[in-house]
Image (cartoon, rainbow, N blue to C red):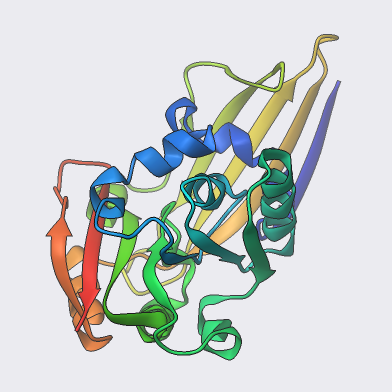
Length: 257
């Protein structure tokens, strides 16, 4: 028996998001440890914002180090799951729903020592205008000398592969259940057009029934050179970049001047 649930946004995926997180980053402490290089630059009680918090693994991991952590996301369901994870680990995390452009409505300029925008999230900002506004908000919330840590897909590589269906070649086990993760990519003809990713998680239970949870997500890709220009316009100077045209993802660390 198969049941299919399809909506737009992240509200359905929030309930099964752990299947999209790698084994290495599922424990909050390990997720935070993946950023040890930049975290070593902070005092233990630093003010940190995770503005694409997902289900909260990074935010909870940072709070476990004694940092003062705020976690935000545009999805109410993601924020709820972050709050639940915080409670499970006894972590002190302020979690609230806000998109990037709303952040200055909630916090004063210069509030944070470090802002994280990770998990390949920035492509959900609508085009160059949306990205610029998002980066401007993040920059405003950083103290002078504060750092933005951003991770991104290598969209040059994604677009070169064209529209396609990617099916994980192994079952992923979470909470005693197995699932197959499927990505369907709709690559528009031009860079500046809206693209779509449909993510499906097909869970298989012990009776052989399959529950498929699927969401179609809108995205607006960008070239690495465009991102660099947009960071600069937002008052951010790139200090570290792992960009490689042959790599699936990269990390940028940029400092507010």
